[in-house]
Amino acid sequence: MVDTTLIREHMPVVDCNGQPIGTVDHLDAGRLKLTRDAQGRHHYLPLSEVSMVDEEKITAQLTREEALRLMQSGARDEHTES
Image 1 (cartoon, rainbow, N blue to C red):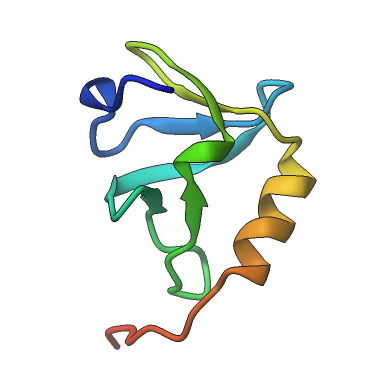
Image 2 (tube, helix red, strand yellow; image 1 turned 30 degrees about the horizontal axis):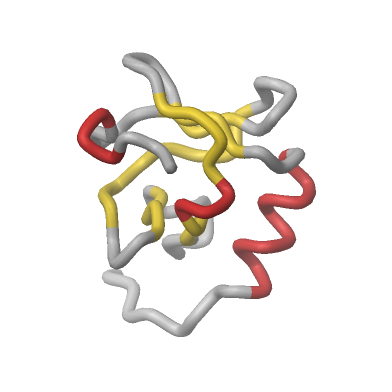
């Protein structure tokens, strides 16, 4: 289990190889809510997929491609502001 008290807004989230996945918006019901993507959508990464949190970043146990696939499959319709 990761120490969620270390998670802060705007922390980078990287994959198991150090490649960027996104940036934390905030914690939301056991998931990392990432800041909006280029299309204005938020994506969520379950905390169960996080392998480590340190002072500087959050590391997922997935590759970038696996994480993006997971976040896309778990996408839910949300209101985006114009």
